[in-house]
Amino acid sequence: MPSREQRGSVRTAVVWDALEAALADGPRDVVDLGGGTGGFAVRLAESGHRVRVVDPSPDALAALARRAREVDLEVSGLQGDVADLVEVVGAGSADVVLCHGVLEVVDPALALARIGQVLRPGGLLSLVVGQRHAAVIARAMAGHFQQARGLLDDREPVDPRTGRRFTADEVRDLLADHGFGAVAVHAVRVFADLVPAALVDQEPGAAAALVDLERAVAQRPEYLPLATQLHVLAHAAS
Image: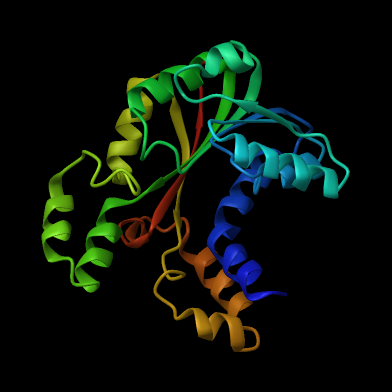
């Protein structure tokens, strides 16, 4: 397996475990908001789900189309963003919405309001966000002490590229404010960003062992503050 695929597998294994278990009972209508080139969308389509990707980048959507053609799958790519999500896909048209790495760089309240309109009653939201405590540590370890101090208590975006970060409690509160009931919160990339890439790439069995370790701590609440990302599954109001 190429090293890039190894690292990608380590970083997304916990999310895939939770998502596939939640979608195990049959094909769903899925909207992947900000799904880009289809890293999640194509695999979901391979499992029989009907997937639409909404993304503002025409280049990303073109790459998605090529990726889907390579495996002879149909994945709909639609140009749009959070603001026009309802107009692009239709109200009440999705059983599942993926919002991975999006809430950091948009208005969270607007995004959750639009997602709530798109989901059918009781529909599932899969949310992945950057986690603040780990970001503070990462910046401090890189010598960016002022950035670390600024991020410690500031809920606003740090910069346009990386955006804001969230704690688990903040995510739960945001979801509750917009009518979502959290089902589960998973710690993602607790160790993956700390382990040297060369070790994962070159040491036999290291990638698989690291995935096992990530899975072992994913649902332990004491590891949430150490996770680079949080994955939350939540249901819209019925």
